[in-house]
Image 1 (cartoon, rainbow, N blue to C red):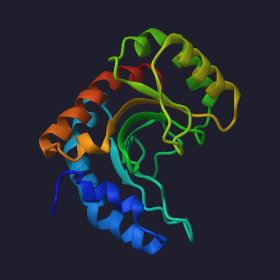
Image 2: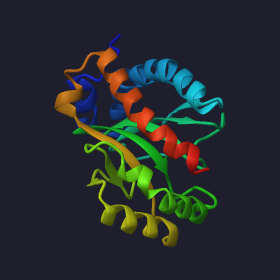
Image 3: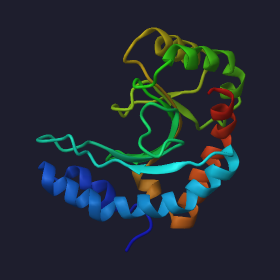
Length: 202
């Protein structure tokens, strides 16, 4: 069993049909998620001083259209993650994403947005390769600049369906050549930078 995201893992998203694509996701991607979860969740639990539980997307509500991406999440809630700030690792067909995610299901979204606006210096100090997404359903991400932070966080505060995710994108080509240990190191390093943000904005 592979413990890294191979070229074939990313090619799962080229497979036609819901059942066939989900079978490929279960075989090529989810075992790697389980391995990452087993190794990363204890780190997060220690770093955050609260239990962090692993949730692997099952796409159970889909009846016809196959998913364009898939992910795992680390959350302080055993039963779910969408209503909490959470950490994600996931794949589209062309890249891996590693996020700290504040998505639209969050209660008290305005409160989180206001706190993030107050902590912009923390976000501005993140490494240069960090990016922002305003919608977890879309591939696009933008660089962490003062203007993008301000615009994204104001929109996150004021628009009901707006989201705010911050972290890293890594190309499928690069990820498929990485060993499991190198991938873990990348995920851990990304989260090490994001943990202070998570702790401040609660």
